[in-house]
Image (cartoon, rainbow, N blue to C red; front, top):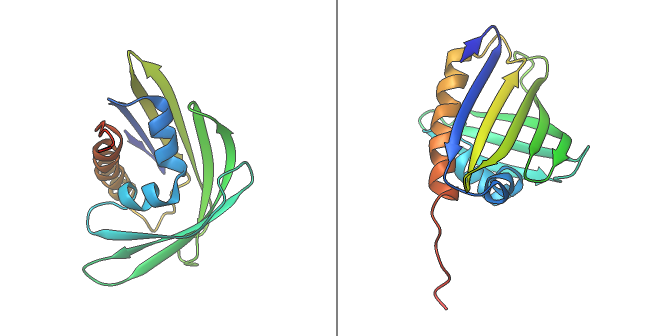
Length: 151
């Protein structure tokens, strides 16, 4: 759902909340699933605790243009809630977005609700919605498979 400068998403992932929560905080996992199709993600720094800062960039594979942003973890409740803010380096995208990720276990799966608010006017909100759809598809591909150790 898209309203104003806010995007709301809802999914059921066939994975326990612990796996989904970890995918949102593990820097190597984030760069695997968060960048939407056609983008390469790079985590420059990550300190996943309340008031911890991370720095990340997305590079458009077609054009080579990179957008960097800095985020702060505002609230972390293991396996239940993640709330963080982002600020873009580009002065043409002022302001701060806030993203709230809620996790709830439902029959061995995870009900995932995401709200991203304060999307800069320079970014069409519909693009954010489409990007999140793509990212959540990649997230499911990461967290849903149960791959046993080969030993």
